[in-house]
Length: 173
Image 1: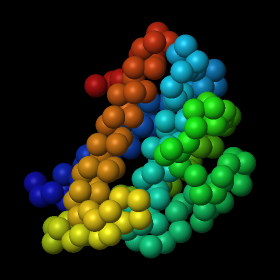
Image 2: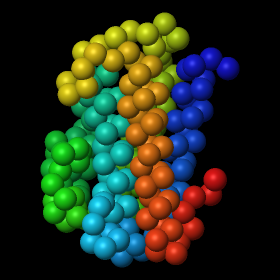
Image 3: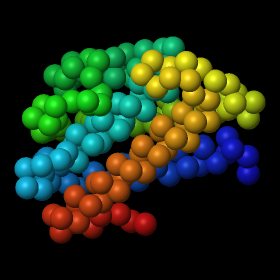
Image 4: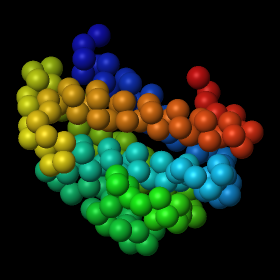
């Protein structure tokens, strides 16, 4: 298995895990914050998928993020540019996703966009270094393997922990 195959397989697995992470949660569970601290699951999911959308679509492919191209910001009444990094705690806590079924459609569209993109790159492309806004000089491999996959893994752990605090099964793994 080559690196591209690994990234494709791993990304599909993480996408599946993110979708499963929110499956069946109530609105109250999606917005639960232990001791009124930290981020809630809805924010974590929004932030994670928005990050993937911005990094892989806008930064790497120089195309409009799915969030903007499909006007999800308007559908959810959210900021067209924000993705949560550096967001004040009060603002993050106030973020609401009241229709997770609809938000799941956005997630699926981003995931398809990513999976389509990964099918177009080559092993040689992985070593190409770009100077990316807010990230500095990174190879494509560093962006996919580090920025995206590691980012998702950490947030999936965070979601599992929050679900455990609520007495909800955290992870199928």
